[in-house]
Image (cartoon, rainbow, N blue to C red):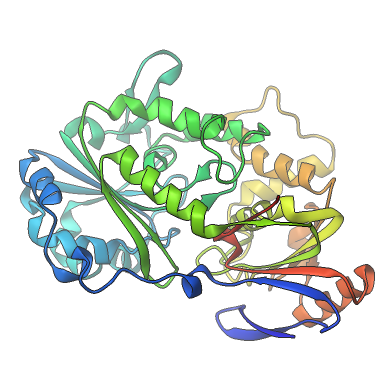
Length: 410
């Protein structure tokens, strides 16, 4: 069986033995229909509720995702551009703990509107205390970008897909971790070690509930959201707008319906094809294997196919992995800098007590020395190795764009 897949910026063929029992979870965009031409996103007729919200703002803050999200921000801003009161608007790029986007990346985020808004664009920096203001009280305090103090109205533009420990991306995640202090992001992500922190889970998920509780400090603002479900080429399959939470709920429901799969029996091998932008580096891969772990047999293998052409990403992750391999990584008494990466290392450690992880990438094997992930450099050789282990009649799932799809056993 031959299956077209994406690897190192090109289409290649994944070849599997015909004797295997194979299920393919195809790209969601092949099953879904983009918004029709008559939708307001394309027609240029801005909904009255959007126009009213924007025109009534005295100091409008528009919060958008950075270049690590597939959100078609440029298209969405272009659709409402005629109603944006630019002279009263500031744009904030929610970077979380990512680095600042380059000038080219900023242009890609804002599209043809960028020359008009360039001087009004601000980039969040979680490490710069001078940019931050404390909101809330008691256990629900949170350090957020100072621009939230200076505005009366907040429009958020985001995209929703499964998230391996926060339940879903989108919604209030654009504030925490998107626009929060490093310390507050660290404290939120520490909840990822809780077994209730799982893909598609919100109620009872301590990560999501912490985000909801601590960002409620902004609920006194005038609020509006545009939330989309899209692919990585910018096609939009769902758009909801209005109140932050209602728009988000609608998008989450769509994702749960179309991006989650219940399987009748677990697989020997799950082959995860990671698509841009999450195939850029090692640090971003965890979503892909956590999304399918529940559908792998004990002792089975998740084979990740991801170019990682930008390397390992956040170097703290590898340093923590080295400490874990030496038995020196403990949860108690760690600094915020350490806590930030522990959840990734510990979750991966726990997962690999039940199954195996293998990665085909361009990374040197030394980059995975302290991680429980077996490095490989050739897709065909990795498949041959695994089918020899599990037999030529083994059960295989192939998950295309695995960071956006979730498998679970019925």
